[in-house]
Image (cartoon, rainbow, N blue to C red; front, side, top):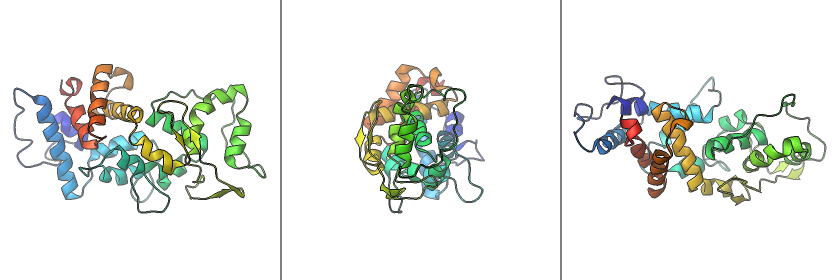
Length: 285
């Protein structure tokens, strides 16, 4: 099943990983979905055992993050793709897994991600689109998108809220800024801080769209995102789009719901998400 190999390994034998006895077995006449799932699991297992990347996971995370690739060292997509190979990896691993660094959990607190999304609105817009699949309109023509000059005595959250109270701005900022507030303990350079302009950082908020969570900080929000059915459904559709090579609009509601349910029923296992996707009729056709 070359399509499974392309999805996860982005190459064909002999260039890809070849679990012994898997690529050379013809697909059975029945239960093709289970066979494809077994093949996908074998590819991921072999990468996990070898300590190598699954290029397909790197490809997906690179597109999902949509941030510049660093000039030196591994990108966040490479680093986190390795973690997702663990058979126990879940959506929580990606969004709230420990990193070994104080104050940093999950991929969104990776310094590369934070510096590429330096503002509250940048971060909130990304989270709205890539975790909740919420459409955020582009700014009106003529809006100055340059970072504002800091105002004395105001945190950047207070300044943003003062600048976006007008009706032309507030409708969109009310949707996209709340998730961005959760990361306010990290400045534009991705450094952790407890004070902003001499005042305590306020990283609390409530998501306006489902799952409509109320949080005190990203430490509070991230674990809840990792077990949110709304986030899981969005994430599953984005991975399906990558696997199928089609737009989100081309994915049927029936298959999207089937994959999202399998994902949720497995406690949001990345392995089971992959197995569910490669077993869909659209992938197998």
